[in-house]
Image 1 (cartoon, rainbow, N blue to C red):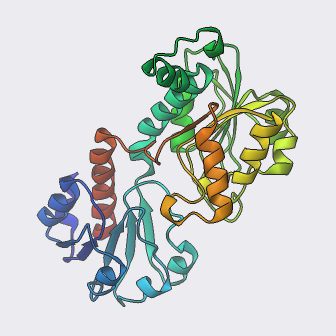
Image 2 (cartoon, rainbow, N blue to C red):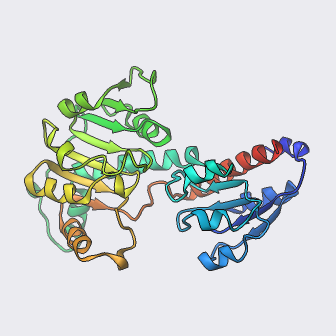
Image 3 (cartoon, one colour):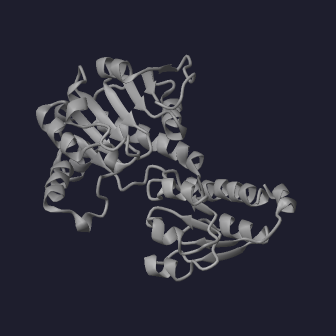
Length: 322
């Protein structure tokens, strides 16, 4: 990685406003860049330190909008320590000539493993059985599981995390149908490159691995859920707004959804839930066929390091081209 250091033409001012592994801060400093590390900064703190900043490094808490982008006339790169760029106005950044980079490949194994773990928990009632036994309740028949082998899994989005999930499923005896609007030619003996129509007809399980965009907002909703020939199990490890929460609640009540595993929610700030959102969350939290985790699918001890390693490499490459 550090063989790029000789190509550095000038020192950059880098502002990091979220927690990252020291491999990023130390690596940038060794490369001769000025690093201001403010992981606890709120929005006012970020704005107050933007003067002269050329590279802004964020994670999820920071919304990068027009105000932030224009707070430094020298801003040339926004780096997301993670996968999604939905908290960055990428269209505006493009107009302003600001490069956006992420580290989507760094946490793909973590998401793939988390997806598989949630799916096995869901099909085998592991969360409910665990909770019951700890309460002294011993119910075997009520917790009879469903085998994954022989099932058809529809994977929507075959980028870093979707393909990692497919890899983790290899050897499980499943049929994988994958659809990605922006990729083609990825079919193999393990994965069939497919389309929505075939997935509607054959899928037993549906798993989302797409970025949140205007196009993917409520990608699964009341109408699309009705198109599935069979009741399905649903996994969402992308972004909460990719799936309409109302459709999940209705689908569970009507039997279109056999269960769901959600690592993300439409509103993850639980203290700010509106009345309708509270009702939806209460239903999901109390449903034995629902598994919820707090957006940690890609957040492991290993990915924490790998995210900073990948981002460091990309920022060194970016700076060498200036």
